[in-house]
Length: 185
Image (cartoon, rainbow, N blue to C red; front, side, top):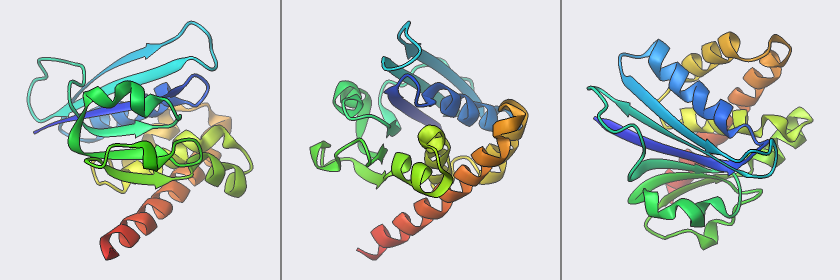
């Protein structure tokens, strides 16, 4: 088994933290191998931010994502920029607050939720949209919500832990609702 994941957005959206938490959760709480690479601009906000994660049940020979099974796009131009690294039939998670699903290839299985809007409306800040996204990501079953919760407790600044865990659970619930709706159609 080899699963390739791409996360992409803009600096300031917490893309690298989200990717790190996925990798940390896999490395610490599963028996799988994990590797990651990251790309980002020199500025702290507004430039492209991308992380590749590879999860495998055997030694990882190439650490980057060549044809992602799962892609997460948190900003509008990222899907077009990185589409060539996403395979047909991939599960693509988007922040529908900022990414238009109609502009994406029809061969992708799109899971669109307004992560930024949900974070702002339900938790009072858009700063945890990345955690709402991770909660929805956990609904895919690759990384459990418990593993992500434990990773947040071990990695995130203590003053942000409670809010981040609330955001994870919000995303998980919204992800489950979306999956149920999509399965009904």
